[in-house]
Every structure is written in structure tokens, then in C-alpha cells.
Length: 224
Image 1: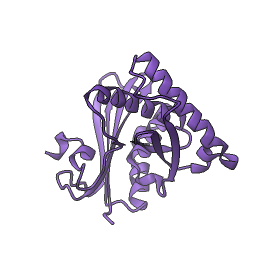
Image 2: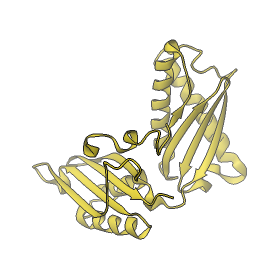
Image 3: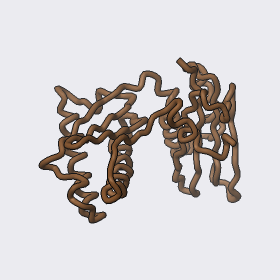
């Protein structure tokens, strides 16, 4: 059953919490959800070099709090906190743009009433973050490095960082092959059906010149 269910959604409540935390009525719910999805997408593009692994959004009556989990916090904060101000302006501009393009109700985001707060949290071990591992694999594949060597090295790095197990799955035109195929690289224990196990999961597309290659990463962390 664990292979048919998203590992993060499967553990919501007992182990993980929601990445978007707010309450809304029927009229505002759809607008807020669209805004969160598009804002998160823009943040991952903008902070790709800073190693953004997770973007959490909290909303209250007059405040939006964006929590950024990054592997290189210095690149986000900047000198004297100048980077945080830039990110704050970027978030406000993005929210307004989304509101205009999607024709959302002004109550979804009003820049006069709503305040934006940016919080930066450092990721202590990037090799234990599934999203960062998947992005790293994708970037190396775009440079036409041998996929087998990339995955074997990444599995070793993750296990050395202290993981209980790791699984990497590639699917598509791997290495520019004419026929799409799947390849799996696994080491250690990955109990997907056990809810109490801390499984980090990510899927990232790699748009190579020869075609689309999907990258999936499962990392079983030690439960504190």
C-alpha cells in the first residue's frame, strides 16, 4: 500500500504537519490554495541556488508568514538582512500578480491590510533532504554525466549522512536512449507502509535535450 500513496500525505498528522497552515471559508479557500501553490512554485525557482528544500506558508487574519528551509541561508538573508527585504517585496509582488492573473477576490491578499513575514530556517544536512538530492541528481544529468555514477555516489552520500535507507528511481529516456525505461538504486531499509518511520520523499523532473526523465527519491531518516 505504501507504494501507491504519497509518503508525505500518508504520514500527515502522526509524523508530519501541513506545509500550508490556515483556515478559510468556502468563498476564499480555492483562491488561497491557488495562491499558495503558485507562490511556492515561484519561490523554488527564485531560491534554487540557495538550496530551498521546503517552503511553509502560515496565514492569520492580517499576516502571511513564509518559512523557508534552505541549505545556504546566507544567500537568502544577504548582507545586513537586505536579502530578506528583497524576498519580502518579491512575495508581495508575486501575490498581487497571481491575484490579477487568476482574477481572485481582493480579500485573498490585500497589501494594505496584510503583512508579509519571512523566516529562514537552515537545513543542517542537505544530503538528508529528498528534494535537494533529487535536484542535485537532475542538475548533474543535465550536464550529461553518467546517470549510474551520479546515483551510486548520491546513495553513498545519503547513507554517509546518517540515513537508515535511500531509494532513487529514474524513469524516462535515461542517457538519451530511444526507448524509455526505469532504473532503481537502493540501499538500506525503506519501510513505506510503516507510518511511524520518517520517510522524506520528492519527485523532480529533469528536462534533458533528448526528453523528459522523472527523478523520485525516498530517504528514511532516523526518528529522533
